[in-house]
Length: 181
Image (tube, rainbow, N blue to C red; front, side):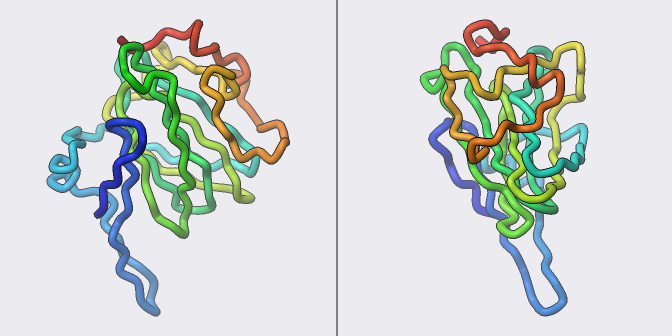
């Protein structure tokens, strides 16, 4: 497994070693020892699986209490996956990193505590799996507006309006949101 640094400290792009032949492929998506050595020494307590159609945008989500680190990967289709630093005193506060995750490239993104997470589905549909370091707590979930001009994410929407949930339509601007110190 390659653990590739990104412009945002603590956010890592992971590239698994893939063993492929005429029968198919095998890859190791998680090994506690390797992750700990790479600076991800967390226990994962919850696995999640979502399926979305093309044009769906989920995010930017985080939990202000019971914060979750997330290990995100795609098993069908393709997404543009984004992490935003929302640690108020961080030198990269308000900055974002985005990358394509797909069933073809088999890359994963580590989104640590202190970051908001969002994704946009670029393929006809996508299935996303992610491991979390803490349990889902809807009372602590917060949403930052996907199109906040202060963050200015270059979503690959090609001018189309994304499909949003009611919760995501009501996301707050970064300047109004509860944030991490």
